[in-house]
Length: 179
Image 1 (cartoon, rainbow, N blue to C red):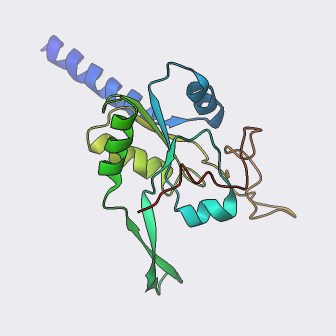
Image 2 (image 1 turned 90 degrees about the horizontal axis):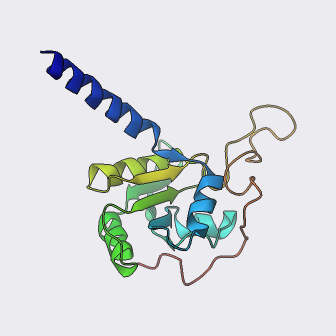
């Protein structure tokens, strides 16, 4: 009975640790991708049109959108174009891993604009589909919005772009998603 309780407690601890370690800071990601022997795939999961207007870091290996904007369908409730999950997301991630000589156990780090709408969900989705070391960049590329003051609503704090890490308003066409 003691063994069963101990085993259950350790399992719960492992699950808690796994949930806590899904997020990683922009600085930690930058350090990892700079390592010559890093077994990591760094993926920008934003729609390429968003990257075009917000900016890009060439530190990412590839752009594979997790969600795609469907410009042929309108979402009345949100007042925007409809957004749908990329049906080829897993297949495209597997292809990128294979191209780099990596397998499903490699660390995959996803990044979106803020970390919450596509970054964390894409990492969780990858974990649910057999990629146990999927993670996401906390606060994403652009960071979180300022809540009060003259700059309220602007994304001028944290995230990749506001952490002094390399980025550009220009896209790298060799890394951009092309369906």
